[in-house]
Amino acid sequence: MELRTMKYFLAVAREENMTRAAQQLHVTQPTLSKQMKALEEELGKKLFLRHSFSIQLTEEGVLLRKRAEDLVRMADKITAEFHTLDDVSGGDIYLGLAESYAVLVQEPDPAKYHFLPFPEADVWGVVMPADCPLAEKEGIEAADLAGLPLFCSEQGWNHDLPRWCGSRMEELYLEGSFRLSYNGSLFVREGLGYLLTFRHLIDTTPGSGLVFRPLKPKLEAGLYLIWKKYQVFTPIAERFLAMLRAEFGEQQDAPLQTP
Image (cartoon, rainbow, N blue to C red; front, top):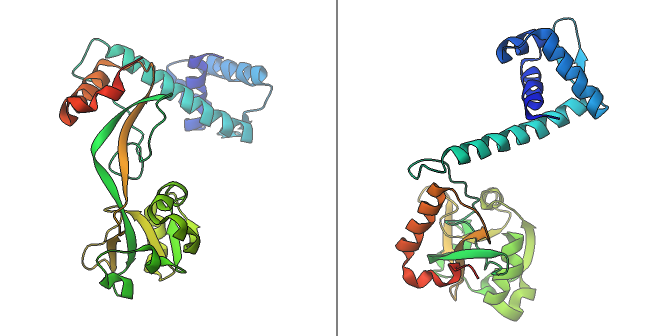
């Protein structure tokens, strides 16, 4: 199975017509048809339902399209990275981001990753309707939340909140968990509970109908930029990392040294 064959297959899947796909690929229709038949024989599955003037993907064809798109995308990424190896002024940087201001909101495993601590931290608090009694308080204590229906991420509920309220964790009731705080805020707007989340993730500006009140005592979550050990970077990524190191100060560089 060659990458070129995957590109041919994707063109046929996209055009749903062998003739148009052949024209787009600048090959003859018999050549393209032969390639697709050989692909079906190699996989042992029928990939197309052929009609008089169109082609439709089978369930197996739909699955292959997803996998082929991933393969072609990765191949294009590799090609682009090698083209920019000698060019430190251009290229792409890929970041995986948490629902926060930084990449990771959890202490990283130093056995697997190098990491760069950010100078600021996220602050935990409660998002609630602006007209509820708790909104009159400047800070929310564990006793204020006892028995109330609460929404929170699983990570926050299991790792962050216990170090804030200790034994009183048993008094708190998790109504539901969400991967995205925005989804939880929709339930808050309907008056179904209170959302425990970071500051600034939800619109609580005047007129929004919601307010944010920080937890008391203050609960913070450290922010980190992490990358796998022995990771090979492109020149532009190396420059980006060097810029962050310089921005955060030399005292932050100690954890970044490769053993």
